[in-house]
Image (cartoon, rainbow, N blue to C red; front, top):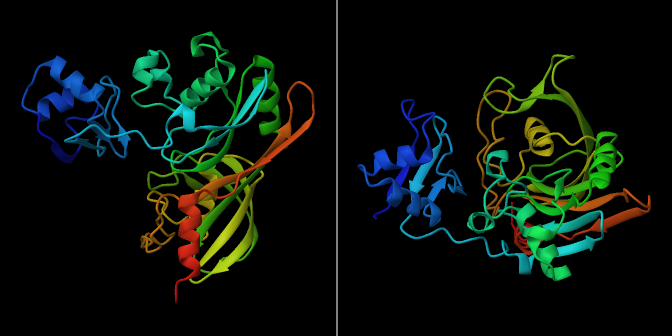
Length: 323
């Protein structure tokens, strides 16, 4: 079946399933044919594979039918995943970019074969652990989520393998005792500072952001220092005191220095849009450091992960620019 160019979901289509909207746009093929297209990784919603035929679409979402199946990211294979630590309670992995950390709750009941069409880091980690232990993945403890990274962010992530680990690590995250440091690149000359604000799901333009209201939202604190001055840009180190959704991206954008490669938080306080000229291969954000107390033994654990090749090449290119 021929490809469909990208289209935005209309108000009339909003709320309908992906399969229904796709079938209508294609002129009424059989439901079976539509399901085969979705299962074959030929349908994308935004920048992600549309693998759930029952997904309810939202107005403005962009859908496309590709000529060929969208390949998995090169790093989205369990044999390529780097496990930095594995014991009975926790596993720490190096997350590649282009992979969601966890699956949407509505997809938790998917069979393993369906998961393999669009695996998350949670899936890949479970399969990698099974390979390491030479045991079937279905017989292993379910990986429990204690934190996550955005899809295009790379870096260190931990999962709990027991209820004890989930509870104890959750407590450490809530009490802000976990060490989390990120590297990122922003345009302009950034001055080191601590950014404090209260974040809300909608700051007034449909995006997450800060509010001036003292009792609204949740407190967010980011400590930002300078790693290196680059021609026209700054390589930053960001240490999270709190861990709110998109916290670093929001804080830096609202400070006038959006993360290079960000496609969401690009609007200035006056309403104008930042023009992306950096040439970043993706969101230039990397979780470089992670540390916590082991949930069972209490031992201090710490890992560091250097900037991956795509971002290192990007930074090297910026060093050679003439401004």
